[in-house]
Image 1 (tube, rainbow, N blue to C red):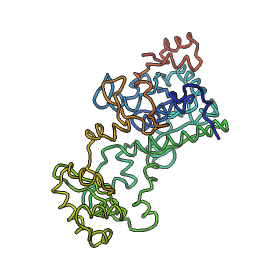
Image 2: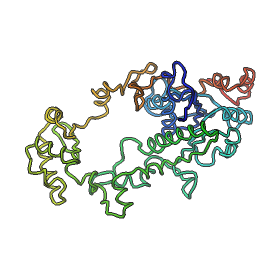
Image 3: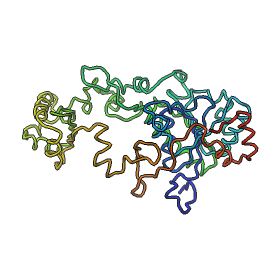
Image 4: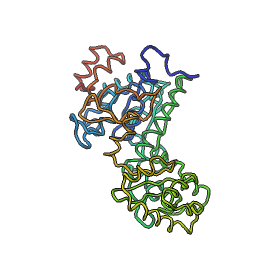
Length: 402
């Protein structure tokens, strides 16, 4: 079995990735979320920021304690130092940081870090066991590598946006940046973890080419599986689980909406029994009956309220739930019981917990989102810089301390 590091007293609080050092050169949501997931597991994540604007994630959204609300979510549990990679002394300092790190993750356009003197082979010459992860829109290779893009473009390029919406309607944007969070956050975090384990076992680091578009395109949805099989997957709103089946659809209530996900016959039978429509059980998937079934369900639910749905279906194994909005969910019984939303010990806002439990508990909050360059002296010292070296770098403007 490969062990990331020897367990010591208190590691439960430090996290399973305690001892793993990550240089986070990312900006905005995708890479920041990737690095925060690793930080929440105990990795020491150091944001390496430029001497200009730094990570402009801080400026987006409602400002809380001088930083954007989303920034507090994805940059907590990290430290920040400022290094000017256009400054010769800054590049030499950065090379020493690379030599002492386990992971470097960046989200520049392809080739940007190489032009600054830190191509993949250079990084690995400085540190043969380094895991180098490059998060890009379209990958490090191919004719699209230099194209600009955002989440809307990535889901638009892969077919996901085309399939999202009602039959006969326009494509509908998801309310969250799915490509950024999945392709730029979850997927590269998984790859980094695997390569860190390998590097610890072999002493050899590798390069992770993490294309946001690749990760979204490769999500194994039912429609894509049908396309790959050469079958007719239907158009927007026509796939079985995208609106064509009446048993898997959203219906309007008197005061909101309800989600019906009764795919399996046992769940569908419960729905039909509660609504007094037992004759619909046998025709659940009949193509020529979907409009009729949907019409009858729509009429039944139109006279119900959210409370009615909770009362009538709360005790049934039917996959029928009133649709909550964000405001309701963060105060919901589920969020409370699962410790999903918690008060922050720092800014005046609530925090989302890490999306997993370890031994029955969420990872603890370790530190607030940092100010730009807040930890420059501290981090350089930990990486072996002598005090006079640190002060010389600051005086030369190669690094900056808040």
